[in-house]
Image 1 (tube, one colour):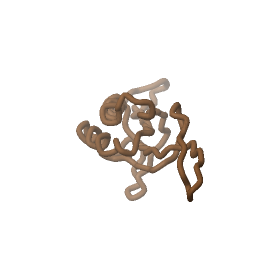
Image 2 (cartoon, helix red, strand yellow; image 1 turned 45 degrees about the vertical axis):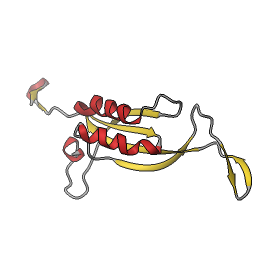
Image 3 (cartoon, one colour; image 1 turned 180 degrees about the vertical axis):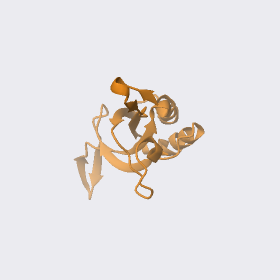
Length: 128
């Protein structure tokens, strides 16, 4: 705890980040193992569609060839305290990297608040 101007106590707020990773579906197991190895165990996983430098693909749907344009990907949403940002990014890269176009992307966003619904905890305590 620090003391600010006029003698007011200032609580040090832990900085929280939301890491969003878009990866190849077949790499999910390896990414999950790499994250668990660095004590990152809480995440939300979603199946998504997207298009990047790969420019999509052509597929056959009900006998007709169509340019789908969107590829299947997996999205990971991981809320972490600032001390876990680098190790989380490194673990995702280690698990997801193939060296090919389409390995994915990682975004790091500021996370203003987190609330654990069951306990009512707020902030970094609610993350994990």
